[in-house]
Amino acid sequence: MFGTSIPATNKSATSSTIIKTEPPGATGVSPAGAYPVTGFGQWGLQDLRFVNPTTREETVLTTDYREAITDIIYEKNMSGVTTLTLQANDPNRTLLKNLVAQGTEITLNDGGQKIRFSLSQYTKASDQVQMAFESSTVYRLRNQRNSTGTVTTTVSTGVTEFVASLVYALNYNNSPYETVGFVGPDYATIWSELTGNAGKAIVKVGLGRGTTTDPFEDSWTCMSRIASSVGWRLWENNNTVYFGPDEYWLGILNKNPQGLSVPPINSIMGTLSPIPVMQEFGTDIMLIDFDWDVQKPYAQGTVTCMLENWKYDIGEIVQTVGLGPANGDWIVYSIQRDLFSPQATMTLQVPMPFASVYDPNSLPLQPFPLITKLA
Image 1 (cartoon, helix red, strand yellow):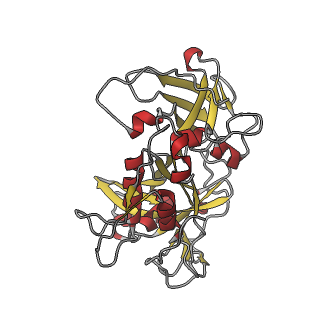
Image 2 (cartoon, rainbow, N blue to C red):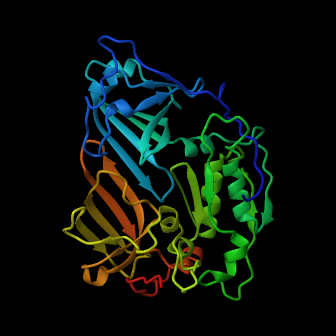
Image 3 (cartoon, rainbow, N blue to C red):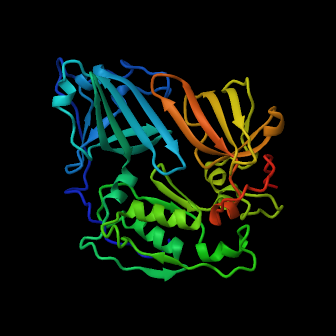
């Protein structure tokens, strides 16, 4: 564990979890399988539960919600926040008059793990109502702020320790939430190993939550600002926060005894040997489209696939074959799934060279090969 924990301010009243169901009758709970869906395999609307942010009481969706929902979109991405979006048709304004409160959580079973989302946005357009939920971990980080609005900044190389301390602050004693994890390399330790840093003195970073223009800066904004300043990625997935440079996630900085790269997410998922292979016209993969332009900082691929479960995960390294110049190793950047469709869309990236992220300039980027071999 890096650093020390900072006491969190968004504690709930109780640590117990209560499951509450509706009384039988017209608004009773539908039997399992009554609302089967295709996009998430053996999963139905009855598996969604609202969680009261204060009492931790869980309640299945009422009939009004289940009958009004027209779509549910689940999206993971490495740009920061995992979201669950509920779209509903509300011609009689039934939902509008009885919408759950901001911050109310909703749970979803993702590959056997319960994922929590917190309501962060409402949108109404004619008869359509949209409710956007974001990862509860990120939502809680957004609600951590300096109570007095004071700003204290220390210039240091303890970047990883500081970012981790903001994450671990969520794991206070008697927290009603699941423990939040953190994965990432130590900034000071790997500085000299990163492309473009050889022979350069390590750069110290101003560390502190709050700026002169935003003294009440929240933890997630603070972490994002620091990640941007050092050219590292920051994202959250399945109750774990990830922080580090592309070369680390590719596994280039981690080699096994045989000298082969060890991508961290693949190691966590058990997909190191062999690296997952993607090819068009298979049982799962339908199409793989790509765009490679040496004038852009990175190449991007779009995979159209059929998934009954989350076979891949963001940050994972996959290998494409049968695509000519696009053959090689890519990182899974985002995944979007529709609850009512088995079809999913994944975005792949060839990670940009670290030097062009850390030291950007207006000059054309030096061409680099699309085929990125990890060995």
